[in-house]
Image 1 (cartoon, rainbow, N blue to C red):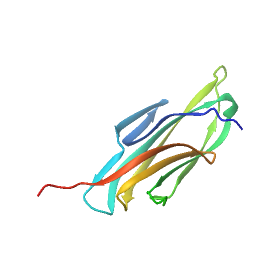
Image 2: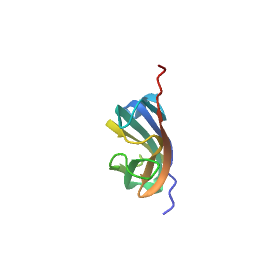
Image 3: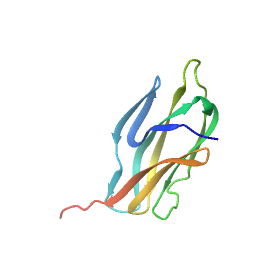
Length: 137
């Protein structure tokens, strides 16, 4: 099947809400600076907005994974589903999805990856850089 979906927003941020079809994001970032490992980031969110076309109506499986440089899961993959219904008279619809992560535990420095798959096919990826915060004596 030919997919025409388009990932319009895919961002890691401090917090996000979905109000009446509008995504509100606070503090988008791609780097965590930590003093030591393991480190726990208390809370963050992944904001996602995907536009689906008429031919893509129906159920879709969405998976978001966070992996380290070795490809090992940092947390278990987050899975869910969306039922895409295109309103009459429209050629597409956008679907907002928000994932809140509490207590994100990081075990390694380096470049991690936040990967988005829809129906088993990778659609997008974000880097998450974890660096050491060095304090001056």
